[in-house]
Image 1 (cartoon, rainbow, N blue to C red):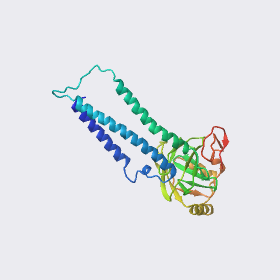
Image 2: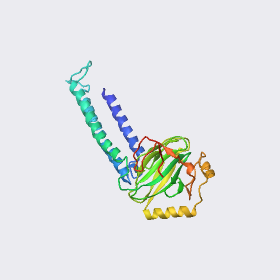
Image 3: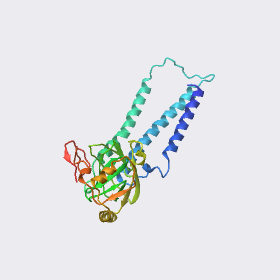
Image 4: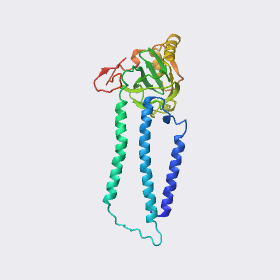
Length: 294
């Protein structure tokens, strides 16, 4: 590689890094780096392990790149061997394979362990269950244990797992609360589980993580984490002050539009699938047909 091409490659790499850093935000607004629950904290640790491994490999590549530039640059008196018909170098090939295997192992082991650890809600904890339906372009949340429903807003107690039962009455979508954990798909006629937990009170931003039409950008919602006592008070307030949802109200929600948060003191049972491929309240998946837990 000529010196001119090398400079061009370096400039392109620096520009790409600058664009990436500016897009990512690299500050307090980059909420993925500020977990507010055990699931998000565990997943952030995986991101850190993966990023550190990749940085080491990138630095190694750049060091080798620099050595190649200095050793094989075109200049008078350069005694570095020139082999235009170079075929292979067994030691170099084994080194590349070894580095790849080590890097994959460093990433794979904690990923395996944490994935299975997060598959089930920790023993001894009773979750709040929320049925989630993605619509065009809004989110419907139903609380089967509390018999209330909301649109584009969730209230949850802190330090208690929340089991989200996810489905869709629209194109496939993705449910995501970055500070509480990773995203999960919503699919028509299917129900998938996702459990999250807020470790401290706060207002957390949620949104759609999957393009589903021209209005998907409006598919945002707030997750308000409060104490158990405050959550119980909120449930009582919704039950006693808000109107019930009728099937006519539900059909209005199916329209292609965006609406402000709404609250309902009750909702029809027919608005959520009665059966699914199944999962337990602990969040573990299995493939037999079972009724959705209520």
